Amino acid sequence: MKYLFLMAFAVTFIGSSCETPTGLTRSCPGSTVQSSRFLAQGSCGDTGVLTIALGTAGACTVTVDGSTTIGLPGMASFNDVASQTKYDITQGNLNFQNATNGTIGDNGGTACSSGAANASGVITLNCTITVCSTVGEDLEPTCAPGPTCMMALTPFTGDAAAYNIVPDASVSSAEAGAAKDATTP
Image (cartoon, rainbow, N blue to C red; front, side, top):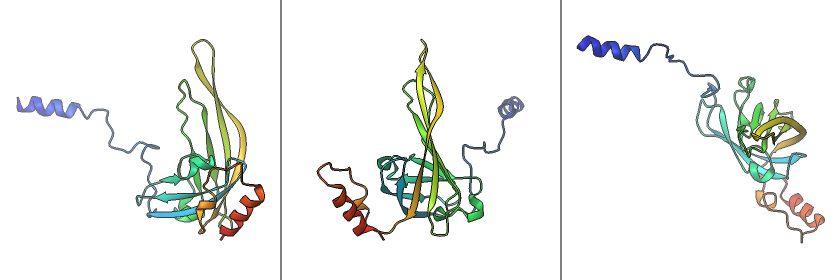
């Protein structure tokens, strides 16, 4: 009886692997807890301030706070060459992506990637907007790459209040520009 129990227990491990699946819990050895703010400007969405933060040392996935008000993806991670810049958020090498789930009602998403920051610390995001539509009687979604756009992420230390507001039609563009100029670092 004792051997039957051990044999049954051993059978449960046949074919299983103790390795971490690639892509699910990718690690970035040497990454540290960090947070940086950026002014995002470009053709992908509204101008605004976002905070990119890494909450767990050794992790690759970062949080992007403020991205939805700007129009950027809400998820990001270090890309494959980020180890060359020691997984430093301010040095770029990030991939941003909204998940597309391929189900009915999926409107697509935006995916952006960046190389390293330039000498001024600006990170350029090159983005592609995936457009999904339902086709046929079974309403299967079909997704395809759509338009492209760019966003510049500039290190930011000023007051974000002038940037992360819903545009008010009663404020003239000159007033809005003056408010932004007053808070630019």
